[in-house]
Length: 169
Image 1 (tube, rainbow, N blue to C red):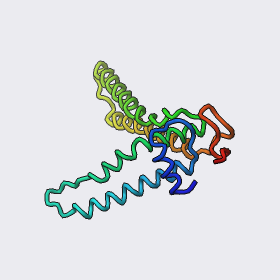
Image 2 (image 1 turned 90 degrees about the horizontal axis):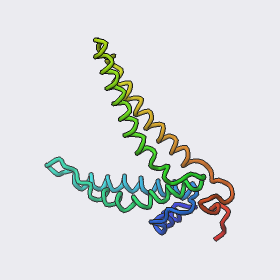
Image 3 (image 1 turned 30 degrees about the vertical axis):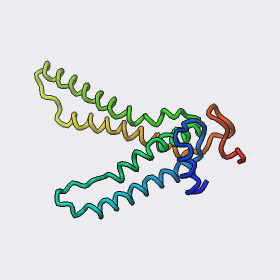
């Protein structure tokens, strides 16, 4: 699938979270969204950079982000379906971040409480270590998702539909 066809397909299937999407459809659309965001941001920067208030409006990029949010979520779900995964896996980083940060905070509170009972000071760098560990969980979930999105299509049909490579138009 080429660049123009991928963009057309993603906008045509705007709210379609079912079925499968091949790697080229997904990655061409991601490139389109990123390049468009960069271009719109540059236009806004050149247009409003002389604003004496120092506030940089992001009207164009915000409107574009809203316009492409649903098709991006939909094509990501279809891409995950193509490798046999549920589209809900794309929410993994959003769930991992607060859960791991909350766990780090609770663990830090427990360490402080134990140190207080023992009459000692908690190890100073431990708080930073726990925060880094929580960020490591977030980073790992992002890397896992990225790895899945780059995997080849599952051969043959799966529970999400026929293999798009094997379907003739």
